[in-house]
Image 1 (cartoon, helix red, strand yellow):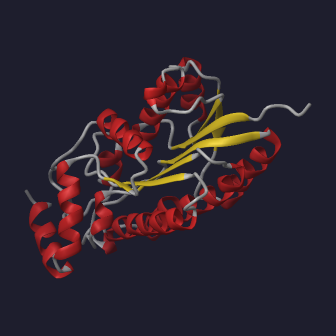
Image 2: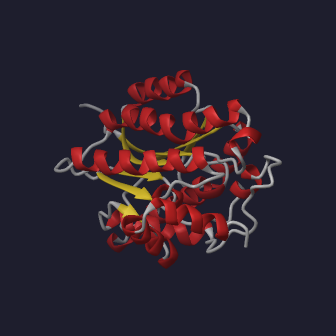
Length: 270
């Protein structure tokens, strides 16, 4: 008799921010047997990030068994290693949540070339590579949440690479969802406004004067994640998770980019 495959949830960026919140909420919901929770049973978490010590501490606090996967997703060899481990695990990837990413604010000339290309590698290329690695191990009922941003709706001066990377994630996710139609795999792009995590401190490492002074419409990570899981359960293509984000999405469809960029340049100074 063949061994029953275990159901695996892979969460990237799991050591902090949205990734950590996804882990916590899925852990609680997976342990509840009521059907209205809308979360499949998870046998094991794979917590993916670079900080091994933090991942191990998080894993120790979960109700569900968890594996700390130390990986730098900007490196293809680390993604290849995860793919190889999946092949040996005899598991079904029930959840893939791609949260790993970072941004930099500032003028192009004050952001290091290494930072600019690393944003593309982690925020865009790694999303595609890990999703492609997981898809052969998914089945009907599996779920994918790709974390984009409301920044995906516009070209944003002084956040140009970050916004462009998130626009890529949004469009990639929408197209992948179309290709997977009929497979039973649910695919959602998460596009929140600012989220109260450590992102803004990391993003402001550049010393450029063209910074974002205040994070308007910032949301708590717990609210964003709970709404994202609900929207994914409802088979939504895009989860905005707030009225401001939804309005930004609509504005981006009808207002010319030259106007939205001008408006952004005013808003970021407030």
